[in-house]
Image (tube, rainbow, N blue to C red; front, side):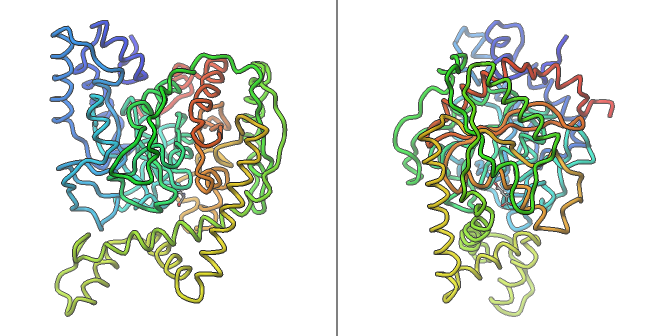
Length: 497
Ligand code: GLN
């Protein structure tokens, strides 16, 4: 029989409502899987088995009483440790917040609880979401479930390795420059970065406020739509959150995509200093062939300003980060170093010990580009270029419904391969960062393998076009048949090793 931990959320829901499986049995299966593989994956920073068991039992009591349950009720989820959880430490994988216990839930967390989702644990990540491999975690890296010597991607690497390694049925990540999509691609799962403003950022610990978005990491497209239904929508606590109600994201799944206009922007395959790997490009082109068979019209196109995305991002994101992270000085927020001789010494020592190398690098970069005399040359100029990038996308979406590219230029790279070369680490994000600069939604889904490791296909849409992305992704997923069985046969981490 199939192990329960391998199920998608919608398949598990069917078993729960048919009373073939209890929420407690589903949870115990996931917890046993965690016991077996977590020492090698290190997806989680903290597990919450006792509260999870109590929640599962409550769902079972509801089912026993003949009450209807919601589509995600009783489903175990892995939550990135950047979202505030009442009474449960929220560390951002930083020494700075090692002892931070939030007095409130993030809006996304509150919504998940209201939907009856069970949070099994808080997942590992790059410190303050800065990175592409989880190697910047102060608590040690996570590992890729397909090859333990490789990174799971980042910064939401823990949530992706948890879902890809079957340590949870659902995952939540955040994406400032690719942190949902790239780890989803590396771990062979689906990841969706919603339109900026579609999901509340209240209670999300800020990295770069004009770019950060929360979104789902799931085993298939249907689950991504279901999770969006739970988390998307207006929030009076976040003034940047879109005030109109979110649609039903499952509504378009299964509709034909005949006549869908797909643009394939060449800047996402080759740019100065980066070339997408031949095996990755092959998988993406094969996926496009399948789209053509399904009736889509495919055309090469160009977004000329996209090549400025990376330099623009590395001005805007660090600028916002340096401002957001100024609050961690040991006075009101963050780790406090004792035994120093005065307050300046206390702040300096606290920040020195509390922050890791990459975070310090970003703070220095950000402080520099915002300093008087440099503001116009760097920050102001970057903001203007950002507008040009957004306009490139707006023009493209007058012609195309969806743009398609690889999610990352390569499959998961070996642990340690890029830690000493930040530029190489940054260049890994050329396909994902432009999307955050434009504020549009994008989804990554598995589209085959290169050298035995999963390749991600990125679908990009206009603002608020998540339904179209999900519909297009679902059509491909059904036709291509990258089922969980195929995934298991390809040999991910097993209980045995
Ligand atoms: N890898 C990018 C960075 O390091 C994006 C991270 C993210 O999306 N949070 O900034």
